[in-house]
Amino acid sequence: MFIRKLFIPIILFTVMISNITVAQEAVPFLLLAPDSRAGGMGESGGGLADNGAAIFWNPAGLAFLRGSEIQVTHANWLPQFHLDLFYDYVTYRTYLEDLDGAIFASITYMNFGEFVRTAEGSPDPIGTFRSFDAAATVGYSTTLGKDWAVGFNFRLIHSRLSEKATGQEQGSGVATTVSFDVAGMYRPEFLDNRFSVGVNVSNIGPDIYYIDQEQADPLPTNFRLGFAGRLWEDDFNSLTMTLDFAKLLVNINGDLNEELRKVVTSGGLEYWYGQPGDFMFAARTGYFYEDPDYGARKFVTFGASIRYDIYQFDFSYLSTSLAGSEENHPLDGTLRFTIAFKWGEQNEAVKGFPKGI
Image 1: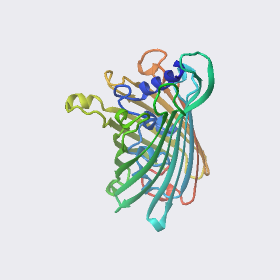
Image 2 (image 1 turned 180 degrees about the vertical axis):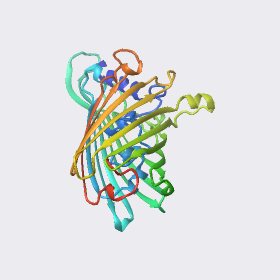
Image 3 (image 1 turned 90 degrees about the vertical axis):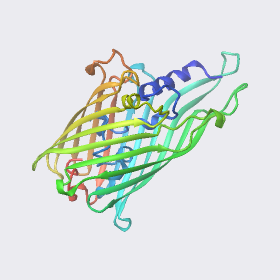
Image 4 (image 1 turned 45 degrees about the horizontal axis):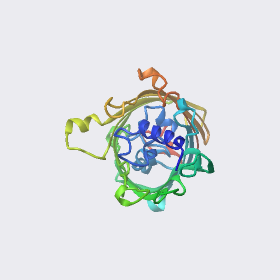
């Protein structure tokens, strides 16, 4: 049997990022905002989607980009509990003229830490094991004319809560499944490509199970509608606004008013100073809101970036206390750090949001 310590971080993690009842959907790490940039804008990015993290937010947006990029993000999770919880996110994207589109890949890793295994009916330890969730994603996106783009992801998901069963337990705490995402983006040329709207349906796939199919849980299939607009831009400055609405497509009960209350709203602002190729600086802020009866997450975010040549460093900070949430909320003080490397014919050659990413 597993000691109680195993379930504490996993249950807390599930509660903090899910907006429906615990255990109604599996592998909730797939819902984590994975990057520092969108993390600093209230965890909104479905309409902007103009860097490597668009693989998560809206893969269709990558069709409007050029050049190549590698991005690495690290964050400690639920810092208020001082647990060995962290996640890493690595992405790669590149545009291929021969394919008339972008190809990309990402790896997401959520670490739950090391745990002690005990024999059934005995407190004596018989070994240790590590618990984690991971996902590997590959995708492709292309434009449909000058204004429209579509994107697709395929994902392999592996969840390893325990490597083997003990006593009378059947099966093990290991499960593997697949999912895919479908996304679209509209960035009208008549608005000088300064406005975009994106839709992404992610984590579509079969249920995942650890014991048997009768005890399977659904994946966190998620619908996201995002908007982004460039409010101001000159030779050295730009100001961009984002707004996202997200809704889990799990256990829908048909009550429209109740389902609308389950919609998560997030938005943010991003200011850049500088010119591409020179030293650039960015500042961000945002707000995230979830209905009190369906998750109750509410927080303010801040972020910043420094960019020079092909290098960019981002970080973001999440505060629940500034948003009026309860004290010592598990998410309070969450920090994300991202390093990005961008090369080739970069996004400055394309109209629209490319400046400053």
